Amino acid sequence: MKEPCLICGEGFLTELHSLTLCEYRGFEKELDTIYSICDSCKSEQADARQTKYNKQNFIEWQQEVDMLIKKWTNCVDNLDQLTKEECRYYTAIPSEYGGWQVTNRYDPFVANLYRGI
Image 1: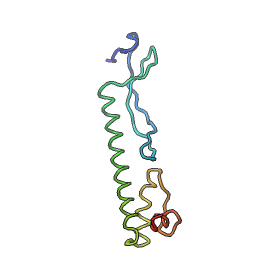
Image 2: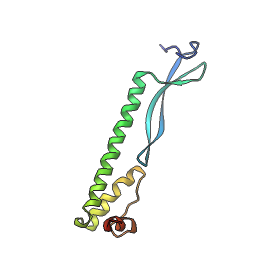
Image 3: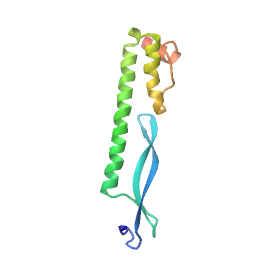
Image 4: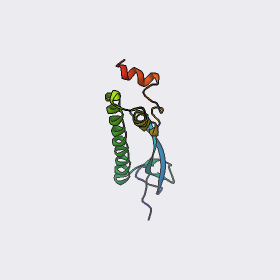
């Protein structure tokens, strides 16, 4: 049974799933979100269960991004101890989330970090 609309009181809510573009610390990703739409007034709304799901999804993604940034930062901090292949691997990690490009320690961007510029 469909729930009645809490806004207009006339229509009924239909639950929808969609991908929503989210941004965190310069990274973007489309996350699955759940919300309801009224068939009468066309308002979009989310109940407590839907909001909790959406928030949990976003928090999990934030934790993934933070872990990738931490790994990348550790790579830059220890750049002089890494081989060329190790550096290529670690600096490529953030590119999976649309952030940095695949680089190595001889690229100008990484070289400047290596020199502390």
